[in-house]
Length: 263
Image (tube, rainbow, N blue to C red; front, side, top):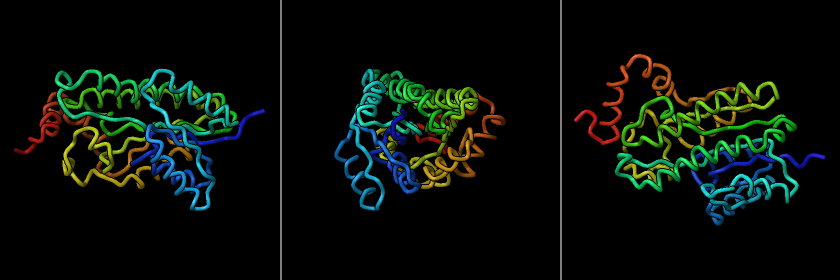
């Protein structure tokens, strides 16, 4: 006998993850919210319940810790839950030259942005197939570009894009949808955590967390392989890498990340 289907959302304490929680809840999904900050998750769960939706289950976990996916699986099984959808939103970036940034922090970024995402994407495939569900992985427009001064972050998102698109093909025959969401800059706690100053990115590239999450949700439900929200971001991902020589692109992005572009 299968368990009760739920939607598991990582990084649900703020930003796009919290927006995903509200959107999935509004469409009738029962949620399991995962992040480190239990109080923030509890407040979000209370907000969703106050709106007349089933109260989400809160699992406070450090997703960079070894065995995080196994601990989540144990917590779900103990409650009689089975994932129908897995939303891998948790992740962070760091601004600065890779050789100068703290190495342990960069390795923690690799653990969260790549290792944990892969683990959670593969841990529940049988359950996702039983419940005709899917996986929504959050990458970035950075996945399409080289990233001097954010080298590890850009590379991690390139991995997420490549992995998710391959998984889309592999799991399609089992009826499991896989969508990779590639937003541009979104004003969330991500910028402060990464050390990115306010007003750093052009406003034309930015979208709200709610708008990005809504497009991601719609893309997943429609079985789309890739979702890039916003016309400017579509231009960056579809046109710029094809037309701009790689060496010029590297130099331009380095200047942008250093805050010196056009100066």
